[in-house]
Amino acid sequence: MRPAATVPPADAQACSVDAAWRAVLAAARATERMTQDGRAETFALDDSGRLRSVPPDDPAAWLRWSPAEGWATLVRTDAPGYRLFDLYLPLCNATTARPLTIGHLGQSLDGFIATLGGDSQFVTGEENIVHLHRLRALCDAVIVGAGTVAADNPQLTTRHVEGPNPLRVVFDPARRLDARYGIFTDTAADTLYVCARHLMHAGETHLGRAPILGIDEEGDGTAVADLQRLVLARGCSRILVEGGGVTVSRFLKAGLLDRLQVAVAPFFIGEGRPAIRLPAPSALSDCERPPHRVFQMGGDVLFELVLRGA
Ligand SMILES: NC(=O)c1ccc[n+]([C@@H]2O[C@H](COP(=O)([O-])OP(=O)(O)OC[C@H]3O[C@@H](n4cnc5c(N)ncnc54)[C@H](OP(=O)(O)O)[C@@H]3O)[C@@H](O)[C@H]2O)c1
Image (cartoon, rainbow, N blue to C red):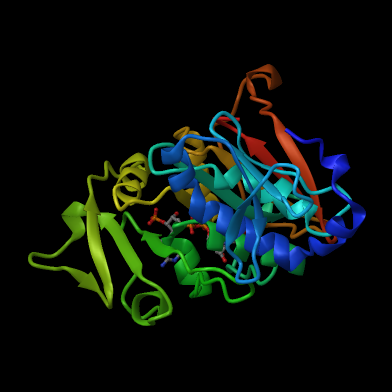
């Protein structure tokens, strides 16, 4: 691979944040095809936001695909858009055969994602919110728990960034929600509603506009593996589990997350809805310390834990 430092400075300047984001989106779209082709290739970005195959020594080459390593950038580390490649290219490598599930939470220094009453607008700052919208745009599906829909009535769209809206999946095993929430009635994106099969009514197909799917729920809220299977079966290669703490913790405890991103904001909530909760260990040596990466996002710090498939 050509060393990144040989890219001329003029090219580094051309790689703005917006252009890098368009290249990331294009890379994510191309992964399935690149995997099938099975050969290494280098790309520039054309004016319409599409990848254009170029020779490896072309100064406009920004991205390289190789079957062994997936996506890598050739852009200099001091280019404005470099950080986006660093943060998002590892997520672009997912395919339907090698899918990726990533969790994200924004929490206070004392480990809460909302007040006790459910106010979470906003725990983290603007940079992290834009990042969250970018994650949605890269993912085929975004999963939230019923508590998040009840508290936030969220849209789960990509309105702060360029990119497609994901399929919205509401996980409500105990069937606590009704059709009054926007996510079940608006036309911004498709929604799936998932609850315990035994709580579905005879002949029932939809909650509002959202198709209902049933899962076999043992009553302990651990049916997340079935939920993940069901979403993957719809052809999704990247799944974002966006909250809340109960739902992300269920995925983490079940070993279903490939990556977990926790953005920590420098303030205290005091008491509130907790972020990650896992069974108590008897000693610190029982706790895993996964490989991780750290990103500054304004005043917040994002920790990305690489849990599987580094
Ligand atoms: N900062 C962030 O990154 C972030 C992200 C997403 C959400 N949030 C906030 O996190 C909170 C929700 O997270 P969470 O961990 O509590 O839940 P969650 O993971 O979204 O959903 C699962 C939990 O919600 C409960 N639930 C279901 N229906 C409910 C209803 N109608 N009213 C209240 N709770 C209900 C469920 O109880 P059963 O098991 O009994 O059904 C379950 O315990 C909200 O305040 C939301 O604003 C923050």
